[in-house]
Image (cartoon, rainbow, N blue to C red; front, side):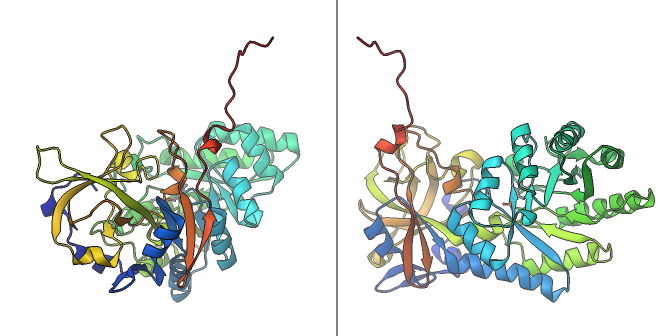
Length: 445
Ligand SMILES: *Cc1c(COP(=O)(O)O)cnc(C)c1O
């Protein structure tokens, strides 16, 4: 979704509210995220600040679980922790029963630190190092999704050396177009991910022959922010075909990991509906007699988070009637608009701002890059220096992608529950940004 749409393509505030029922304006308190008072949080904690709602996370997780219960389908949910791996988020989801999908040794340690049982951890990723694979075997993770023949051989050798059995699935690239942004599509033959569909059985057979591997089945993950059923339908059909053929060769297939990628409403996309996903999985995969997994990241965490920021100043370049509203959050905090031209809804926070006339404006950060732009030609109530805004749907791929570019410290993070909030990450101090830096070659007397 292009961040640089003109005003005619941008939804009205009303449309934005319609698509975001967890946000409401209280005449006195201003914008509420569920019951949490965002004006109060911004004033007390400062800006920029990430807000994540425990209530929304929990509700969304439960909606997924219920959808599968309704279909009487046994599906284990592995939360893709790269979307938002904060320990508070992991702790909440772990207590709801979630496992974890991880993509690095660091994420493995993070998941363990949040007390996620190793048996519920699935290790994905196209380039796991020897050290990371050793850690995974040592910690006895439930499953390693292998993405190439080379990795399979490497893992067999390491497992032999450690005298461990490695439980594996092969990640298959089904060559299905997820119909999403090219930077978040992963299931096309041209992408680096997975084992080519045509080679799957050959390599799965090899997995049975190599020592110290325990082949469980297959995994597939075709991309992110997928808002239609078609790519899933195609990918599942291909996997059913593959599983049937594999079993005909006399090889057992006990697990199918269906990946993540369920889309959410940023702009006017229709978010993936858990009940529809569940019924599609039931109809396509229900008769396979197999353990099913899913790995949602964005769908669980995205709508549970917002980024609060304050207007520094208004500036008019004379060229264009629309002013630049320069805010104190930037691309170092939220890089998605810069990286993927992602569109994020933006709402004023204080009750008073909602009384202002609406104008067309550009919302930009202070970083020295033209790409540091959050929105172009948005219709928003007139914003003055000091006013607070909320950038919506930033719970996934938000804080986790932050950097300290331009020597801008990591923002604070809070978690809300009911009308309460608590700081879950202190704003980084300026000095902390260079505390691990070393100045070499200094003359000593
Ligand atoms: C990123 C990723 C996910 C999660 O994707 P979402 O779009 O956030 O649901 C799941 N599985 C794998 C292997 C991934 O790389």
